[in-house]
Length: 158
Image (cartoon, rainbow, N blue to C red; front, side):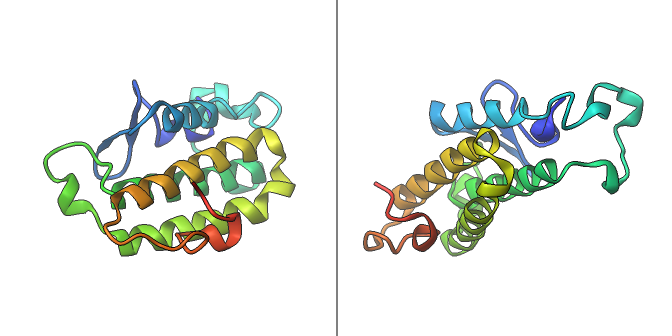
């Protein structure tokens, strides 16, 4: 299994620590599919050996750590945007927290992109953009263009 396989994807659902999240559209689903297959034999030779699931942090490639951190931020932001499945999705919604998570994700993606390459940065950018749009859709008070979560780092999202 790949980098993101421990916290992602089963038939278009995102696994978080608290719940399954039904992904809102195929764009986000494709991002998570891309993230889940990023780990290759070259970047993670031990990933195919089930007995080596727990590895020393020194053996993990930086791109995997960065991608995993980004996936956790995405997962949490999706829940805070109200995208969790189930009757309690509205209760879990917290746009103030979502704004913070999306802004942190934007900072990570923008700063890490030159280091991790377009193969890894592209899906992260797509997921970030999808979350920024989901935030805009969930918010009753619209931010001015360029003032939404993370938009000072990424530019306005339409």
